[in-house]
Structures are given as C-alpha cells and as structure tokens.
Length: 317
Image (cartoon, rainbow, N blue to C red; front, side, top):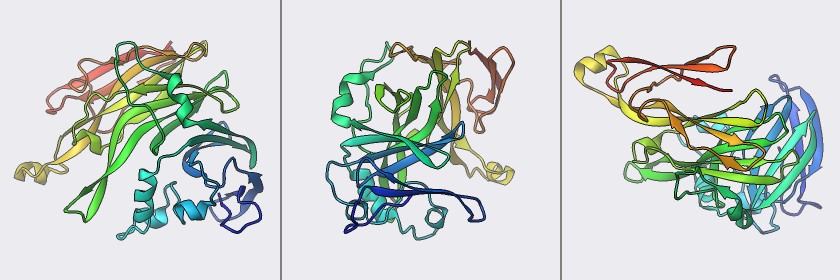
C-alpha cells in the first residue's frame, strides 16, 4: 500500500499491489482512499478478500506530513533490528487521537468499499456485557487488531485490544501494554453497527505485558458469533530444566478461555463464561484445543503450579 506525498496532484490516490513471495506483481491498482492520511493498523485475508482496519485525523494533510514514513503493519526489516528505526514514529502514532475509523475491502486487487466512521459518533453504539457496569471502548487512539472475521450474513467483526507503551529500563527501551478488549461489528459495506467493549480479568502490570488471542466461532444457524477470548494469566515459568534447578524463572503469558455470544442481528452480547475459575483451572502456555463434528471444543491445559492437568469443554451450537 503506497500513499502519495505532499505536493502530489491528488493525495487521496493511493496505490495497492499484491506480489508473490518472489516479487512477481499479481494485482496492482490505484484507488481513491477515504482520506489523505490513512494509517492502516492491521489487515486480514478472509475468503480470498483482504480487509484493512485504518484510522485518520481530521486534517487534509498528506500521509508523509502526518506520519512521515511510519508503517503500522509489522515490517520484519525493522521489527527485528537492534535499533528499531520506527520507534519515534510509533510513539507519535500511539499518542495520536484519530477522528475517523476506516474499513476497506479488496478482492482480486480491486477496492470493493472504503467506509468511514466518525469516532465521536460511535459512543451511542457501545454495548457492554449485561453484568459489566463500565467499559473502555475504542475512542480514537490506536488499538491492536487481533482478529477480523466475516460472518455468514456478511457482517464484519474487527476485534482487538487497546494498547499503549511504557518506558522501561530507565528510559532505554519500551514495552507494549495491552488493556481492555473491543469488537466492532460492521455490515457488509463497512457501516458500523455496534462496538462491544469488554474488561480484562487481570489488569496488573504483569498481565498487561502480554496480548490476548481472539477468535470467533459461528453457530450452526449463522445468527450467533461466539467470541472466544484467550485471556492472559502471567505465571512463573522455567525455560529449561537447568533454569528450574537453579531457580531462574521468568514471567510467561499463559491463556485461558472466556466465551460470550454475540447476537448478530440484535446488537447484544451475553456475559462471558469462563471454564472453572478464571485463570485458575484451564491455563496453558500453548493454546491447545480439539473441536469435534458436533461443535464441541475441548480445551487441554494445566494449573498454574504445573501439578494438575485440566480438560474443559464448551459446546458451540
């Protein structure tokens, strides 16, 4: 995805290209972006189409004027470097308060739609689980997109976590912090219908260091989306037998499932169900599950002290 620089005849004329792993161009097209400074947060391929989640501010400045050369989508040319050259742009991006959210779909290299949602207008669309009294929805700052799913009725679910960065090691480096969950439900043309906002179970500094994992499982009739949150529980972990013998432990992010039902037609969500006590029984570092033909999923893990093996099950009907 390429954005025109300041001085171009039309700073909304973006360029999209798809290439093979050896650099052969498969599709390449110019398209009209909804704004000159469209910062793409993440993307996902679903049923052969590519969906992009993006945001922009209220100005008409070109992309390079607002964000220089920063590219929010992970770039292995920078992310593994000892001196991460994108850091200063990333800090600016995390502090940016966006005014608009955009959802784009490309099929066979061509733009199918590019929608715009005014962020200040979505507060009336926020829905919480019934027993949750407060929430922290997406209100304009960057969030990490962890899942994009297209439902049988054509709705698009964009789920992720609110994020920030914390300066550590006496200012020499930083760490991401992952907070509450959001899921935005769009119709087939990218118009926002609902935003679901869900609180974390554990929100201390250790648990905020690890991102959760999110997934959606559709009901058999296609009217319900089961929202599977793989919630994080930070536990003591020994990376090797030698480390255990010497008592040199580290903190590792383990996971346990919480599941809620989203009514795709009714703008409603159930309370989340946890297997056993949240974080106490089904906890595992490498999420492992088996789903049978009847829609029953079996979760396999262990307790925090590595003393018991636990098996939990949930029926997705």
